[in-house]
Length: 71
Image (tube, rainbow, N blue to C red):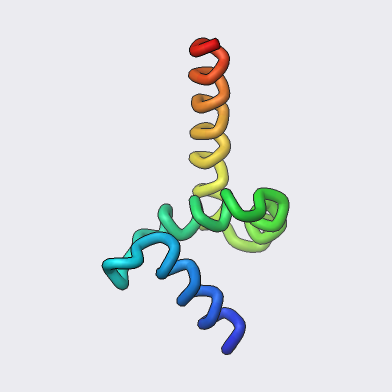
């Protein structure tokens, strides 16, 4: 449990250093950016993560397309 609390504290500092709050999607996005494979493994066990993963994968695809158009 202590490990999870420490990890959340680090994420809070990274996501919103001036504020102590963040949304579920902000948390998921941060975890996704740090370790996509790890997030996918967690998503197999957690339906909420699966839903977020769909949005995050779509964001990545859109960013890739935009980057390709910008070349």
